[in-house]
Image (cartoon, rainbow, N blue to C red; front, side, top):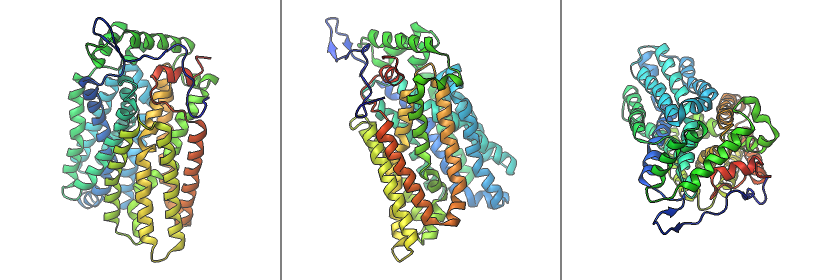
Length: 469
């Protein structure tokens, strides 16, 4: 599939250097325009809202249980419904984005989220609370796919990695905001605050363009060219990029339709393996087990749960910020390798600390969990979604994207569900297993994941799907 982590160069797309023509049009698809920046900011409002959704249940727990008289079991059901909704959303997100467009899918997701937040905020009992949480889950199940795909499809190749990684940066920021505000405002006010980025995105979406790749997919070529011109700037010659998008889209769509069984053709084996594999290794190493049960992990180690959980949420922000800055300089593979290796070593440190059970256990567990969070934020948190949004050809992107996000949510559920059972058996052993799984992730990335920086989406997708051979 690749040599030294690099996809084979397309023979159809020759290098397109930045040159000025006699008519003063710039021949380039690398310009950063206010429209691209604004469109990305609007898209990541949804990511920020997703982070708020994930971070809400922990700071709101005591207030909701006291005000509504919920038992621990009832609150556990409430918390788990976000994952159930996410799985439902992941089953339809690709088809929805293909049917009504990337903007339409973002609108729909935010309607689910707004209904969910206000249902929670004004709940009088468990049933409305649970319905709101389920609606939120469906919304972020849609958003998880469509935001990175939309950003990847509108941005020039030289900034695509950084701009798409901003998706995870905003998720981390939303999570941290909920942890911080949850200490000073009531859970009902916190839910209303969570709805704010959703409402902002609903209105802001009226002012951003649709994805040019989606317009090519449905045959709206005139709109494609107008949209691409708006995204790249009026003094940029977009004729070559527009032609490449149209030509590759026709080639892809001429081979097979976007049906689920078509994913398992031999030509898509490499891209499906990479996309689904990254979704598995993003979660299987204990990511959401640590996120969901951080308080109990710190308490078991004899460390302050408040300090541990808040610092864990906050430290993700600079870690993902570094990923944003380096994604297009270092590339995806180096950051993913560093990330998986760091998670492996950090989980090993936590497991060893629990097995030793001495005076240094608490501080070693704290260092290990924070190290895990930094390593995760540096690579796998955001770049797994970046690569997923880059490698699937347009004709299977909907089905492949749905499968990838379904695998991600399902693996997350499996890990979070089994954590308490595994911890009862052995906390140290649990983290050593997570360490071994992260080590397998390092091998997977080193052997199978291609470098995609500096390539157009069409080049990446044609190369990995063997259209150029």
